[in-house]
Length: 395
Image (tube, rainbow, N blue to C red; front, top):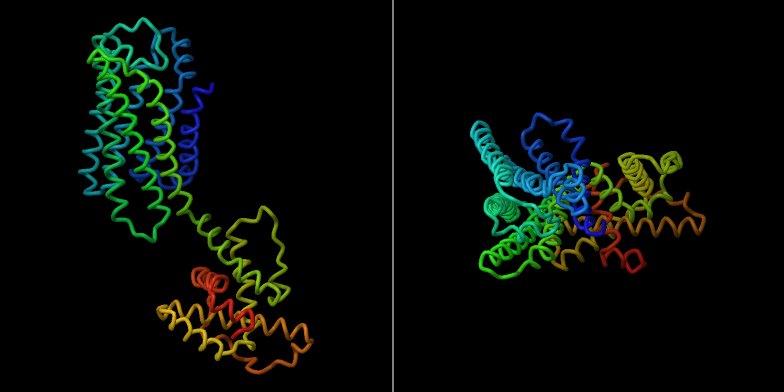
């Protein structure tokens, strides 16, 4: 079973990616790109589980055919390679009719290669079961030799196409799309590892053709490379799906707003801050509640804002080389920090009710219930040295 874990684990990662994608697939089944992604993940899962030594032994035993797993695994791997190219075709875009024709042609070619692999296995003679080293053991056997070459060439074509496209896309991708760029980088890394797998396989098989014994490359070096490649590719599909999902974005904003929420929750009205939340409350509801507490706290501090603090902080930020928008954020955060400090001091002195100057005034820059600027405000509120100086009373 230990031998199988090296492939079962990445196979499980691909299953996880498929499960994450399932709701989107159900809603957008009519989109060819979505179907291509899910087909690749399904076939990739099959490859990982079928290629594991325990599965190979079980399939051979159940069918009663020695080395029956060989054409099965090679055929599914060829289908995976074809799925990579189909995905590349859909990712590349172009006129729908052209993409459909190219997809059909690719499916036909790789389907024919899979059938050829089965035919070559039937024509060859493999009487000795080889669970881990069939490639090198039968590298010089007529018909089986050609079968091995077929699956390696097909796999090389599919993997190269997917890796090349993801690399080009990574170079052009917007730097702000971090989940997408991370996913593409992981897929490219998986492609590089898969290249190492192919090099090890070709080297071991080629050594057999030359009368040398490099079987260790195929038996011991190639499987970990294949497993690592599958793990990276699976993770590469998961990261954009999770990182770009609405729930993940909500959680990210919720986490970034914590410094502001922590500082302002004591000033929000009880009706806002005491809204009951359970541990199973959706992250979207939690985000709305946190934004409401922050907004209500800002409104409660309206009469404590000091424009002089804001102006001084703005000038200090500009003097440090910050651009206008960033300096404005720092200034807002500094004014807010000063208001928090003064309101807390007044509460300790018991004279909150006496402070009414500018009671009908709000902050110079209105804050909206929009988590993007609030998150930026929270970042400066918790990390800016200028704001820290104001918070400590050195304004």
